[in-house]
Length: 342
Image (cartoon, rainbow, N blue to C red; front, side, top):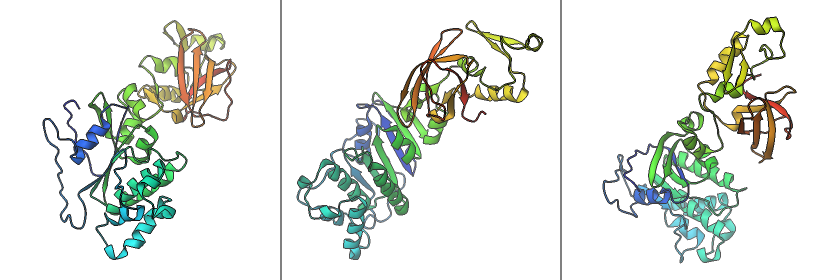
């Protein structure tokens, strides 16, 4: 860790970064498993009565399960409220995490996925003020992970707890956090609201912490979108009188004919402030005389990656977008549209 300073807000915070970025070290510092070599970790709002609510509970990467306790005993051991309903509460959590048939099993008798689920269930059973989870559900079948995240979210909200979890999966950082901390090489490179980083990232690198992103430099916006704003624009094939009445802009050798319609021009001007576009915000529209040609195309179910080449300048760019109604094939001529454009 390299001289980090940050403030964690109440609520749900994701800590995201590549392997070795320092995510686990930060979680370990917060829980007190690793003392800081300098500085300190402060909790601004201590729990009023620790006999009724634990201040913090930790889910380490390996689960940290107790080898001598059964699944049911793991949950019963940490309950601090309504202890006369232990069986009812443990059964509910075991059912929610599909472990009811494993209630009498020891950790050594469980699969990795079952141990991951039990570790999370134990933390939820404790209902602490702050839950710290290091790569939770990392060994769980991806098809079932959303179901268990629903349980985590609902329990955190119902308990009035805060959650800090480390992950390298952008989809969980986006979907399950209100705040995000991005880490790189032992340092914090971003700390703020998840929605802010997703919608308006300060750089392409930071934006990609939360998933696929199209980044357009200042001079690229009109280059790629200037001919994508509707039928009222003109070009080399337009009527000469109309063409001569409109100014033209040249960028890197490509002539981009001005848009006649004021509303369309305002739409282009608004795009100039959006250097980043997520896959759901951009569309490739096949059109016979489109300014770009598809040179490669790959489909990934949730999004597609298409390599496009500007016909006039031969300049290329990879576009990440949601698959649309129009099938995209190599060799197609296309134009780029913001998803809000007609």
